[in-house]
Image 1 (cartoon, rainbow, N blue to C red):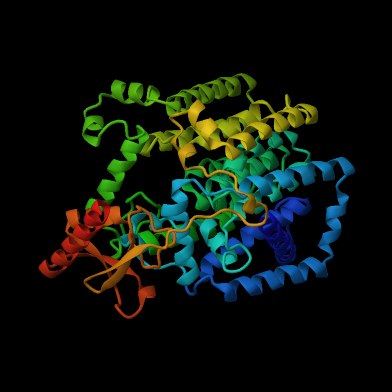
Image 2: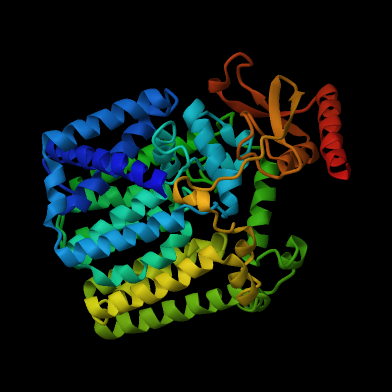
Length: 546
């Protein structure tokens, strides 16, 4: 807790300083107040680091100058005086909530993507930056979310435990108090579950709710609002509804000129270029719009990934062959009636969207109509590609926010916030209770128990056991008796991909054997390489028998 507090004390003033600097440069602000500068700082630093990561690693030589520039403007502009504007009651709310955030974020990370995707991505960015064709080494690394670029830059010294999401929750709390958007307090306890990892789900939910509130209060700064909405989409493309909403709001309500969309279009271009560089296609993991780049992943591996995504739609309760035999009716019925909690989530998702559509039709409000259209487009795309609940969880937040905005006064919000905080803190501290109440929520089995050392240092896992192999011109590491490479020295390949490569008859190779930054390609194996890979897979199998 203490370490996360110290991290926040350094990073938040840095973001404030950068936010003020960017407001001065662009002679404009994203929205008013401390939180506006903080969010603008995140936005600006993320964009700068994304461009830099094509050329250099995001190491301490990037982190220290960024911190120094931010702190310089923080003190030069006397931005610390802004914190004295909160009332006494608001200060009490902020302090108590800060302690809760620090406590919840100090627990062990438990989201599986933390080990298989977040940490490896950050490690690559920190040591090499964006590497061309990295998806050939490990397909999931082709995502390289901009949120992980942002985390990687601060992870060398000031945030080595990767708790940037805790810092974001503090910023979100500042926005709620500053703008008196009390209903958003009700969302904060749910977001405590995302504070132990640099999960992109947290920033996209937080930023979408902030942007939604700015649209509802008729923020007219459409150029930056649209650019920021594209930035949120670039963090996680399932947020496509947000730039659609901002576009409709700008054109049909504010009657904006098309030139205001130029900054957002440039960010969209940068996003697509980043994906092409790491994955070979403009939008991960969709293999559409093929430019024929030599570093794109093997087609068979992409098909295998697509099949796995379809199985995940049904929570792996059916094989791909069984799903292929479903009629349209079976497809819908089986998705609705999966075993466990995900069936409830799926049904609630469709019902809430249906109710929201009916309410929108009755009220005939333009802004409400555009929100509804945007959510329907997003939901249709998610249902079409991979209808996993984690891809549409943000829809619940939006619908609750819009429909209950007038109902939740400050008093009601405080009561709900207090009640929900107690529940979620209890579940985070005692995950075995959650596992008993909701057995189908498998993530609870990965949640660690409270340890006293959390009071000064957040809990983290270590493995440090790995095998080193060589195939063709590539020397790589594989975690020993563990499916993910969260602390394995890079280049590292997840063991499951080794078997996939063997089955497909291909294997990742360095474009330049003397320079890893030149990237990777997927190459058909010759007989000698096939023998090497066969020995590797045999050793992996035998390690589990010992």
